[in-house]
Structures are given as C-alpha cells and as structure tokens.
Amino acid sequence: MKSPLQIGVTGGIGSGKTIVCQVFRALGIPVYEADERAKWLTEHDPILKADIKRVLGPEAYDVSGRYNRAWVASQVFGNPERLTALNAVIHPRVFADTASWITQQTGKSYVIKEAALMKAAGDNNSLDKVVVVQAPVSLRIERIRKRDPHRPESEIQNIIARQISDDDRMKIADYVLENDESQLLLPQIIHLHEEFLRIAAN
Picture 1 (tube, rainbow, N blue to C red):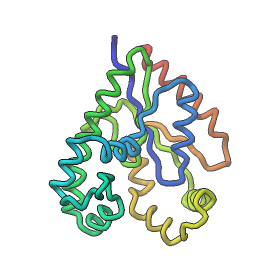
Picture 2 (picture 1 turned 135 degrees about the vertical axis):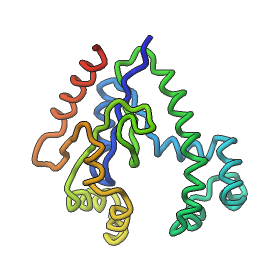
Picture 3 (picture 1 turned 45 degrees about the vertical axis):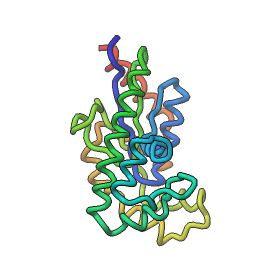
C-alpha cells in the first residue's frame, strides 16, 4: 500500500487556511494541524516536556504540570538563541508525531498538513506539494478583528509583521488559493481536490 500524497497548506494569519482545511476535511481528506498538535505535545508528551524543561528551566511548566505559554513566550521573545533551542526540541517531536499519523492514513489518496510555517515541498520535508492561501493584508486584519474584537490593531499588525512575508510564501507555493472575496473559494478547492486525486492515481 503506497503512502498518501502529502499536501502542505499554509498562509498568514487571517488568510483563511483554517476554512480551507475544513473544506478538505468535509471532502473526506485527513488534516494534520501541526501548530495545534505542537501545542498538544508540549502538554502531553513526556519526552518533549523533559526537553523543554532542560532548555528553558522548570518554570516552563506550572505546578499542575501545564505548559506556561506566557512565561515561555517572554523568555524567547527577542532572544533568537533560546527560540532556536526551543524549536530544536519541539520540531523533531512534531515531525515524529506527523510521521506516525501518516502511517495511520493508509488507503487515502492524499492528506493535508496545515502549518503557519512551512518550507517548499521536498526541502527537508516529506511534502509533495504546497498550497498557499492568499488574501490582502487589509482583508486579513478585518477578519481577525471580527473574530477577536478585543485585540488591538497594533497587535495584529505585529503578528503579521513577525510572520514570513507574502512574497516569501509565494516562493514555496505550488498552488495558490485566492481568498480575497472577489472570487469563490469553494470551486478553487474542489479543483485542487480533483488535481490531487489525479496526481495520486498516477
């Protein structure tokens, strides 16, 4: 049984990648949410918890053993070395978790891996193709404000500024989904779905 085709889906905050993944899921395609799984693993994976404490110290977890996200963020913000050290322990565990998830998806033509950060297909990863969900920054800000009305615009701008640029994202794109509200998103996703089924069948 050959392994399923692996399709990466990425996009900036507010681009709509979550909706895109929900549609793929509705089409019966398994979706692996790397960022959500990373959060789950930091709470539940004993090897990762030990590694994080080794890198950042015991304060990385509170007395009840929960990941102290705000404290960790304060430790790595503006400290590239600590951030690199933290990522160096988190990424391999997520990678291993993804690999074991893939082995459970036998019989599927393709699977989706969703992540905010992604490299081009085949660049030290097992992805076959990368889909970038694209939307103008002004529209992305408007969407974030609708779903999170208490978040100040300056904070949203900061998040967007910290993420990789749209231009850099486009460099890794094999396919682009335009979610700019001037064209329908669903037919674009269905078209990609049919394309991936065709590639997987060959």
